[in-house]
Length: 309
Ligand code: CDV
Image (cartoon, rainbow, N blue to C red):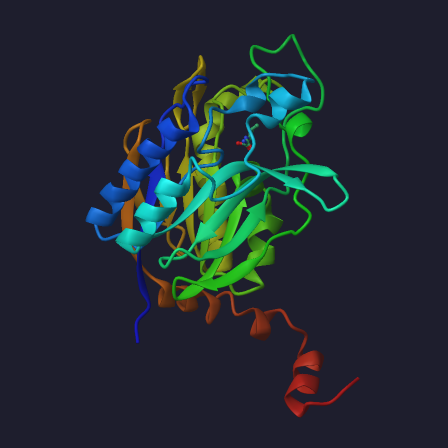
């Protein structure tokens, strides 16, 4: 039986510093309803979709820092989104800042993305591994990118879940530039990778990269898809947010590396594609047949004989 899944890449335009979680949830729910009316079964939202991109401002005040974080998911502010999604029978993936308080009282702050199935159950959470930016205040910059001050790297690596009729994984923003992000999931049989991002068009450490932001974005998403025989959904929070212009370019990539849907604005917009998850096997069972082309013959013989060393 064919495994088709209609996916919506729900790009967001800027979120102002004074926009509340409730304001954001209204926008997210509207995107979700638009996607549902167009047949989507899964909707993917950007990185940190409940707040402005707060690492843009440096603070040492622990309370101020944690005011951007969610200790529970769902919580009072996000429950309406969870309820509406369940009512519509649409799953979703949502990026947000997560506060985890350990049994011993230790506090951990992660840049997190959650995956929720069509029946409202939580499939899993991914916590961003590659944390870019800087650790301390750098007043000479036109704006801060203090992710390394706000977040610690996720301890769990890249997981792949059985969900939505296929094998689904997640990554967040800077993760998409690193080949191992896709490869780890590729070797676990991933068929669909969901990636939210916030990418300022100005990169202070090396501004000559600014003009290449869009090229690099599509380069890594397309290569990750093709080299691992998987669909990749890249979803931006784009446009000019609090004076900082960020890349939009939300798009869905096929295992061939081709774009099958993309947004044309820098604001709230859903790009929709009907994916055939079986299409992944064309690549994974031919050109990228890992067992055939990469596992040494010696080991294959041992495996076939069911023997030990
Ligand atoms: N949110 C991000 O991870 N942004 C980075 C920027 C700092 C380059 C990115 O890789 O897009």
